Amino acid sequence: MTEPMTGIATTQVTKAYPGSERPAVDDVSLHIADGEFMTFLGPSGSGKTTMLSMIAGFTPLSAGSITVDGREISRLKPHRRDLGVVFQQYALFPHLSVARNVAFGLTQRKRPKAEIDRRVGEVLEMVGLSGVRERFPRQLSGGQQQRVALARAVAYEPRALLLDEPLAALDKRLRDQLQREIAHMHRELGMTFLFVTHDQQEALTLSDRIAVFNEGRIEQLGTPAELYERPGTLFVAQFLGESNALRLRPGEVTIVRPERVTLHTGTESVAAGQQRRSATVTDVVYVGDHSRIWLRYADGARGCAVLGAGTTHEHRPGSEVVVAWHPEHEAVVPDAEGNPK
Amino acid sequence: MGERTLGWGLRLWVTLVGLLLVAPTLIVIPMSFGAGSTFRFPPEHWSLHWYAEFFTSKQWLASLANSLQVGLLAAALATVLGTAAAFGIDRARFRARGVLRQLLMAPMILPGIVVAVAIYGVFLRWQLNGTMLGFVLAHTVLGVPFVITSVQTSLAHYDPTMEKAAACLGAGRFSTLRRIVLPLIAPGCVSGFVFAFATSFDEVVIALFLQTPDIKTLPVKMYESIVLEIDPTIAAASSLIVVLTTVLLLVPQFLRRRSHHD
Ligand SMILES: Nc1ncnc2c1ncn2[C@@H]1O[C@H](COP(=O)(O)OP(=O)(O)O)[C@@H](O)[C@H]1O
Ligand SMILES: [Mg+2]
Image 1 (cartoon, rainbow over the protein chains, first blue to last red):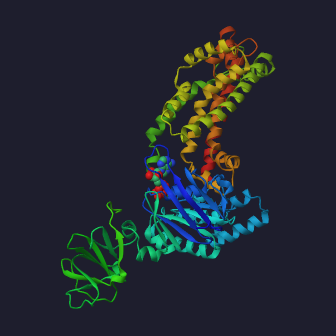
Image 2 (tube, rainbow over the protein chains, first blue to last red; image 1 turned 90 degrees about the horizontal axis):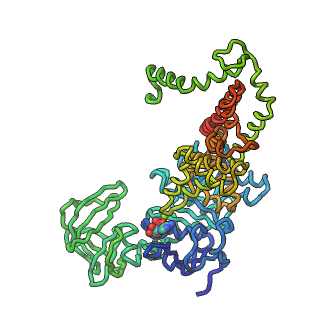
Image 3 (spheres, each protein chain N blue to C red; image 1 turned 90 degrees about the vertical axis):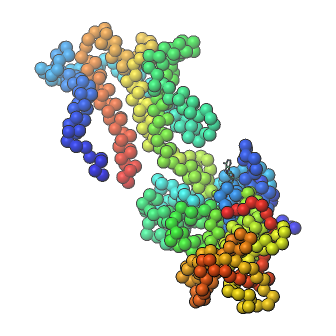
């Protein structure tokens, strides 16, 4: 493989904190293409923040290298890396007005005053906060503060924007709204975004590609659809969305997503060539645009089926059903001890 | 908000206790404006005689100058050391940091005479007794705990992530210190400086041990003037100290108000 020239590349990056048994980040190599929206997704403690913080320059590497556009940066101080970072807790400067917070990166770069004024106006406009230039951070709501932090981090047009769980401190409605705004900013700016989250919905919605982290390693790297439809490991299958995980052969688990199964009251209606298993309905949840039918298979495994709105069905908790799917919708992954959930 | 207003009975009580604590100190002020050659409250005739006496006496003025010099230098040194110590204690994760903090706070808790004897003993060996440097160092030790306490209070509302944010925005260490860290902890540093200065300015026990005929601080000069010759100039000196320290101690209050309101 040849060294990719543009974008951010990490090669065999490892971080072992002194005194801990296993490395927080373990031999991670990946390439984030120019302009890509890359997400690190994984449970808490899987090493996402550590990885982001090594790229930003806050945490020294134990081994490996990081390059931006082919240039080695792993020994540069953070203020020489030309990256923007957004933190979960905003980290705005409380003694500076919104405008001066946003201008900070430009002032550090000694840009002319007129350019700073123009640019601050532009980015505040982009996040819809033109009206609060002279306010102070404590006079803003959480959502507004995070918008200011976003504006501050892109104002000086850094090489890439790193975001560490930027929405985790906000309530659900605001989170959805800011998610859309971040997606919009990414399209508008064409900048490389590296987004860290433990929320699979967020990752699936926003990303061009997702790197699923588990215990300091990348479990799988791919587009949202690839990860969802073709999970490579049991961990990925269970971390991203619901699934029917069936142990049909020893050493293997067959994964079928809830949208890919159909439910039948008898075997007659099942088309030829389809896989089938019998199960018991344990719960029926109506969510408006679809219904979720929770299942238990004969071997005790739990599963789920999704029926679109408009499907009439007679399934009640306790009813016996036949679950059927087409073999091409199966993903077969190695069986692994240890369950992520 | 209800629990923040006091009932009338309690208000009366608080006023009474306050008066009892402050009254003896305040009596000295009218006394200092008396015209007689002895202490009298209230004075029969009023005059600025004792102030004239104070501000024309070489000895009194020299001691005032000494006190101001020691106080300012010691407060400045204590502010630098105490701020660094407060940061260290706040950031460090080693096990001995509790012990370290107690050690640095000790001069505030130990009886003054114990500290004085200890410092006198050590300074005797280092030949610092009776030197300006000696006074400054001794009073710095007394001032450091005040600075640590007040800087720690400002650090409690301080998010270290801001330093990371400043770094990736392009600010080096010095720039971050100057534009982010110092402005945010400045109120704590100023309070600490003021407390350290006030402590030094009216400190008498250590200053008595360290004094020489050449270097005397104002409180030591006052002590002597009471022991040797009772002279109402001391009332003028006391009034000056009371007014000066009161004004100084209001500075942090004022700063805090302002930083909450703007
Ligand atoms: N400063 C540190 N010192 C020691 N261990 C740390 C430090 N920061 C993180 N860790 C450990 O490294 C692992 C990964 O942490 P982190 O990168 O914060 O995970 P995530 O962001 O995915 O939740 C965890 O086991 C955590 O306890
Ligand atoms: Mg994290």
